[in-house]
Length: 245
Image (cartoon, rainbow, N blue to C red):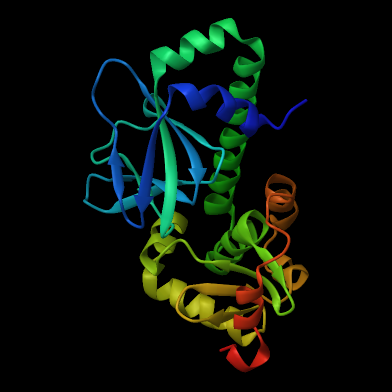
């Protein structure tokens, strides 16, 4: 069977309005009667909302292939999608148009159902991370997820550009920003990760990182196989021992 995100993208293509995004760009959901659907095509996005005490809450991390429905978002003020990558692309489709296509195309309907099931499973796993793990284990879980999802293999380890700010990480993991900083410092001291510049993370030893998180096996089952396997020459050069911090 064709890859599920590819099946969905093929059907979205003639219906979609393509939106190129920059980091921190926000796309609010409209109150129109016809539901809006977004398909993530490039980059990483955050579904977020504002809680009654004015705190921001990241509801989920969205990866290429993910679908966002306005009706699937909670009725909280400021519910929106925010770009976390420097450049990204979303496809926007009217719900009525996609509904008509799905009703006439069982393969598409099945693909959409399967992908929403996967996204729901990811959300359930994230809820387990928040309810069952301590702060160090939660940060390890996030780093494992990002390593598996968007990591690139280099001679120095598996690297990825951190798409979340320190405050975003704190919001996503129900921690405070200072606690996140202390946990990341401990991970660096243990040799689990290193930093290149301000945002690039190198996972030096994924197996060792996995021992820091009791839910590592579930995270691996959920996210493994999604990473780009090889970084380009510029990335590899940037990660030579002389440039590590």
